[in-house]
Picture (cartoon, rainbow, N blue to C red):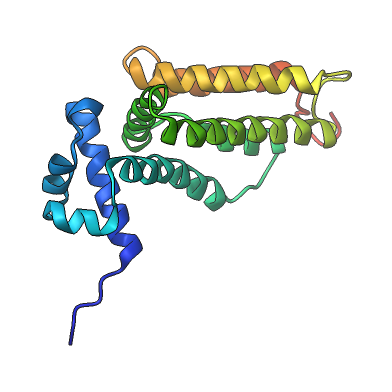
Length: 204
């Protein structure tokens, strides 16, 4: 029987190899040859899945975003909405080694996007999606009556977007200083600052 190869899984395996090379050696050293070697295949085999380095980079960059989306979709939301929003926001931050790894790779790609137009549109799309998530969170808090009265939803969307993006960057670049505990405390404090005081009991 001929061996059946899952085309999509093979592409993901190559992309993950690209992530490792980028993290360990930098974007400039992430040649097709090195990525193929890391993936345990020949350059010719890699070319079967990706016709160019740009195509490989675009797929690899998009895969980072898709992994984050998968985690968000898998969250089981329960309890107070403010806690649910915090859970969602934590998935966007480098709270553990896996997420920090993804962050390092993502920021390497976004830097590359400044000079590679094939990556720029993808980078812009992902950041638009991130801003949409921030708007969803703020509007959810407003709609459920949890936000402070007369909250400027548009301004708070931009403020939350800037906060999460900044924490993601510094949590990735300075993990010893911007720790997971610190990031969680900052997110908790920020949500508290834009929400009404939580009731301590049903009669409170």
